[in-house]
Amino acid sequence: MKVQIDMGAAAGGDTAGLDLEELLATRLLVQGNSGSGKSHLLRRLLEQSAPWVQQVVVDPEGDFVTLADRFGHVVVDAQRAEPELTRIAGRIRQHRVSVILNLEGLDVEQQMRAAAAFLGGLFDADRDHWYPVLVVVDEAQLFAPAAAGDVSDDARKLSLGAMTNLMCRGRKRGLAGVIATQRLAKLAKNVAAEASNFLMGRTFLDIDMARAADLLGMDRRQSEMFRDLARGHFVALGPALSRRPLPVTIGAVETSARSTSPKLTPLPEAPVDARDLIFTPGPEEAAAPLRRPPPPPPMPTAEIMAQLARSRTPALEPAPTEPQAPVDEAAREAGIDRALREILDDRDGAFRSDAVLYQDFLVRCRIRRVPGEALSLSAFRRRLAVARAGVRDEHAGSDRWQTALGLSESLPDDLQGVFLLVARAAVAHEPCPSDAALARAYGTHSPRRARRLLAYFEERGLVVLRNDLRGHRIAAFPDLDCETAAGDADAPESWQAAE
Image (cartoon, rainbow, N blue to C red; front, side, top):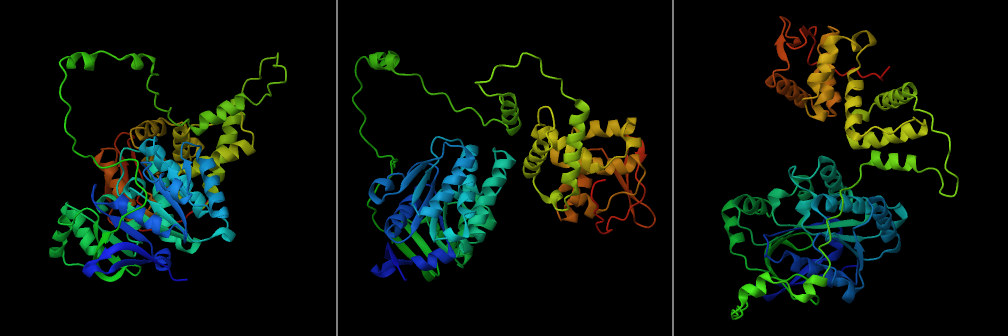
């Protein structure tokens, strides 16, 4: 079924049509600086296509909730637990309900986590529920940033992974991504590159104008036109819009956003007692409640598990009169070591994120009923880095190895495993690990990145690298007074499970 959406007026007075069926197969990217009319464009698209296709809107500012009254969208408040949002998303696909995920009131990191959980639920729906869905993400640069910002790496990876799945792999699952961003330079390239349809609005920065012109196949000299576009005017290109760059003017909408552009209004005449009006609280202010404090930060998983372990006794049962038996530290350490060895036995485990491995570790500890509180994420990263180094018992208690452990604490968490792997080889006077072995320890397939890590250690003064007469690499540790044997940096990877 071919459905043509009326987006407004094209050049020459013709109707600017958008092929909805083609859009569902090719995706859309909207770009324009603040005030260029992106939200107005998205609202026009949603209103015109509402009778024809299920819609899901990821709304960071709560601007699109007004669609609910006119078109029957269900507003989903994102101030819920992430697993609950994932389950809600699965039911949305099952029952084919158009919804708006309202992220208003959450900070940036909480918005990223909530959006990742929600988009993940849409993506992981059962195959029987892969109906066509138009997934609109406003301010997409928040959820798929091109570079790390002030949020944690874990939140950024979750959000970026969900957006990548939406744009790269969502088509076969019926998910058609429509993303809008203020700046192309702030949007991850692998997310933007998957769109085949483009609507480019007013842009002022040279780097954004150049990327917009490049995406539209225009000459760089023609990119200056993006500075002159008026509000609500865009240049369209793509199989669902036009085969050549086409100026379009977005038409009117039936609903309006809760937030509007500022309008100039005349100032009131200043009263004589203006100071008293400002500094003296009114009677209604005294009875008004204080400002609600910000929500507390998310509780770490380890602390939640510890609280659950402490509250396992039902409230109706009498409290135990005898003191609990002390935790068997030997059994606890043995259980933790066994869980770590099982993780290292997985050939693909080195290439998974620490957050994924940590969840796997917690599950394994619960299965084996490891006594005591679970390790925190930072402690787990430290234990995993030491376990990956694979130091033997005869060297584990040596002064050199203890010094190496102390030196590694000055490095970032993701680099400690690589450093300890080379340090273990030096303490045992074994050949220097190859680039492939160092890349596995870092969780990458790139030997070049492994060589950069060694160069970073050398810049920090922790390692001195040299080559023997055959060109094999030797890593010397001045603080440990030892060095590795000569090792071939280009040797192929020889992986084996942890013993």
